[in-house]
Length: 130
Image (tube, rainbow, N blue to C red; front, side, top):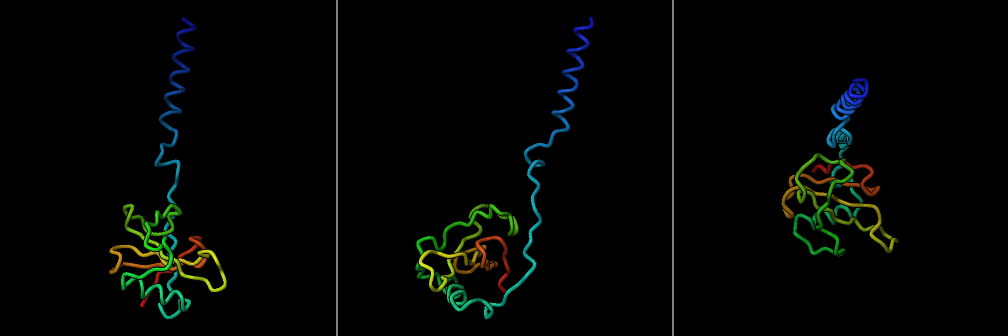
């Protein structure tokens, strides 16, 4: 009888651990959306203004990565279904690679609902306003 009680106690403890343990949705807390700052189109670097205009014209784009889906893995932007956001390179003078500046737009490619600017490769974003 003593052995049965020990087994019962162990199983009860395991059940409590399983019930109280955070599930997949709980274990990864979603950070709050941190885009509160804005930037006017005229405040963007000259290359950013040009890219913003090209986005609304549908191109042509220099980088083959321009217009690819932005996954929002950092969860810095409001959550939407995959494919909603697209990213575009804002060229940096004197840099031979893509650099760290991007514009990320949500919605239709040539008529986006909203666009954001990042100068630090997705560490922070500012909403682009007219």
